[in-house]
Length: 553
Figure 1 (spheres, rainbow, N blue to C red):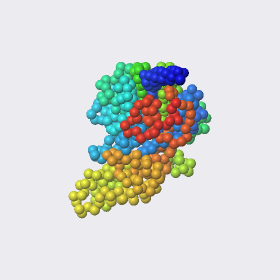
Figure 2 (cartoon, rainbow, N blue to C red):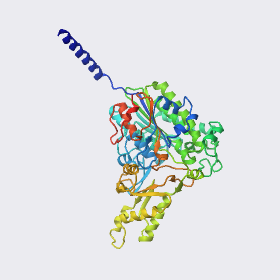
Figure 3 (cartoon, one colour):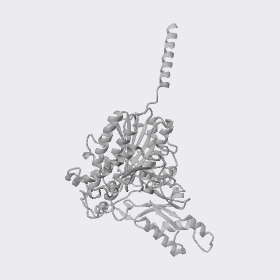
Figure 4 (cartoon, helix red, strand yellow):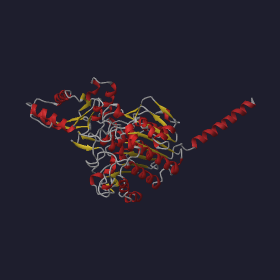
């Protein structure tokens, strides 16, 4: 009996001691989280270009030493940059976080709105005017970066950087310490008075180096042997590609020296913009001492250059292959720097994309695959011409943008005063639908308020439901046929529900991450949920994603 009593006594002491140790030990978290979004990265680039990636480059290290979710899908429409960055960092969808496109027509304000525009702030770091009047004011929910700041009583530092304003601002969230984006007019990284009144000294010093001119001096030459491009790519020069470097520059190599000190915008359409951003990331980590404090810090990096290159030249171009071969090296350099400054296995990285991208329509047609173009403005004019002819009113459609058709609700309210005018919104919607369904490019036209009654597969209905915010969405959504896009006369675009636009990479790496690969379907909304679980913090306020448990140790 004494032996049992003694055993129970020691058990209680040991248990109590262990419990006390566990309860007083700090929550385990990485020193730094680095979120990487590659603008317009198709999932298949991981494997299509696998043999050209370097063993010590970024992609093979993330795939080999980290965790790859190979079937990650964008669960809403349209698949564009602002929506993608918002979804990654909020874990939510446009219907909830409110970013329904890069641009939208605000049905309450009755005007076009840019996703991060804010006329109540001023630019800092440039005289570019509107280029600096940006903030996250249009984002309705919190981000994972906001939640980290809240969880640490704002001791964590959060910084967002990108060539694009929306690529820096939306990931950084509402409570960020800073967001910096590139101004093509001045060649500087800038911010707005939403964050600060003056650029930090380290950003000023970075801008004064005029690194863009250094990259221009190098020109854009082949990074790989010519036979590699011939093996992986379309022909070198194509009439259906855009010409961002003057009409006489038809393909690689490109003369960039002519832009030195003159045109700082051209850098965005080269892979050197990725190098520029990676150097800014290093400067931010060093100067802001990210990963050196008592609380976890967060650096959100969005590489915009692949999107500019993709729009101009397409996924099968020499230019896009060259861009990804160089980006592999650039991300590898960033990982090396993190190992050196923050410490191996002391930081966590995730890499994903805001959307993928379609093939150029003429490239598809050349290979007997369906594809084509249309023009949003032309569609708007055609629709208003129909109403002009039918009821002598030519402005019943306010906008056609990113597959959304917006009715002029104010005009319909005015029409109600005139009983002799025989048209209302229901009739107008039906007229629009019947007209568009006669076009070869259109698969279906859906009334967004009643999309659940549409004869569409459940997957598309769910994406439409996730897209619809009455204040900012159109009345009708056009579902184009596969390969159809609004992309002008050359180049390509994205925004559709098809896998070429909606299937994105998702890689996790570093502290707290398992090694492995997952084939089951996951979603862009799951990223913030998973990072929240890793950090033991609250999910963003509008998060609808699920934790990808297989990723976490």
